Length: 175
Length: 175
Image 1: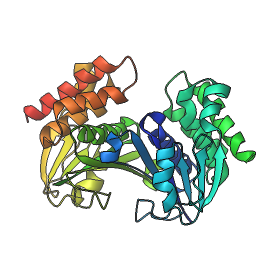
Image 2: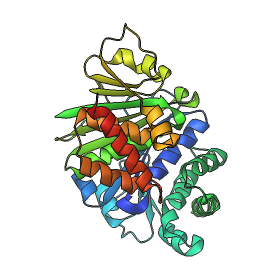
Image 3: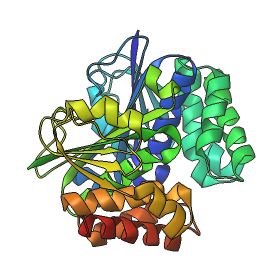
Image 4: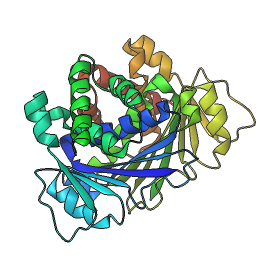
């Protein structure tokens, strides 16, 4: 079992933190995980990409070669990484304009809107997205996810982030 | 130019953040960078390892294969990763017991003590270590480092972390 995640969006969306939390939740569950963030010229343009590999075995190659799950929160991210999806599932924000030439199974969820309007804080979009990704993939346990989120978010924001995580898991359930 | 860093220590020392800041400072300077954190059974034992590759060119293989710089803040980290240093420089905390069988050039600096006694906060040891690593390697500019630290540390801790960074850079200068 080796599952590859690619989390993509814009620079301020906190996807690195989402990737770290996902990797640490997998460890809590007794699996192996590796989390990578690449920067390059595109990072200066404001885009962001984090990857997480989760496996029962040792992980030899730490980069996603053929992602099972792509999270794309912006048009740019979707247009850049969507066409690379040979198998697996794309999870986009509903604000992303879908391209009929991208053939992978795609689930559009109101992630940004949920963060902003239901939870009331745009900055928790990454944790809503994490919940959605975890819910759709079913790779990590809810218990480990909660623990991992609480250990990484700033003091005093635990409840806010728990609500964001639950909202993300709900989005996945209803999809 | 490809420079490989491995940052190792115990789980609570914040070395992942130090790695992220180092990678982002390199981007600020117009270079490419990739930051990786591996977790595995050893992570559950409380140890921590982050890696950063900085290059002028595209980075094909994202893991350190032959590190130029190893930071080892604990005995465990030193004993695990020290023997793998074929070239390059090991930077340890002065509390680490050195092993004469590990032949790489080694610089022992009072990183943990500086954080605790000079700055007065044990938790900034990672930023002191970052300053030391940056100072010894000379790979990133001080300006980019400062900017990158300020963008990643919690609100209200900017001055504390700037002092920690400066103290780390000073340790490197005097070494």
